[in-house]
Image (tube, rainbow, N blue to C red; front, side, top):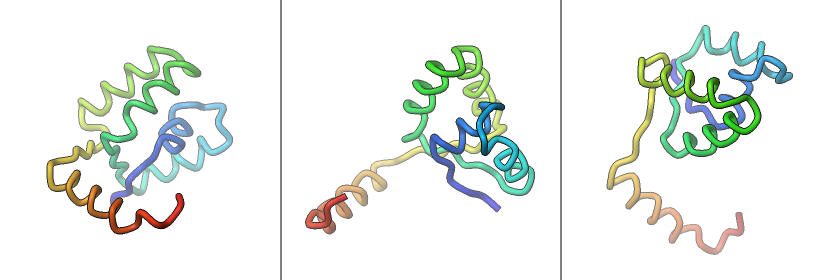
Length: 93
């Protein structure tokens, strides 16, 4: 099974003092985390700021070594996003 992860899930995985760390570690043993390109800048900023540059670098190395799947966006994804934004423009988020 695969699951998209967000910044909070990645930080919980990397930060051993996070109250959800053990839960995320257990979850990672049963599913594959897919890291969307859209969360990488935020993860890099937060991890570097709070856990240090080395932790951020190791995480990026893990992605490049395919420890985690990495989801990129193509032109069709951007077009679909714009379509949804227009479709739901009246809904405050």
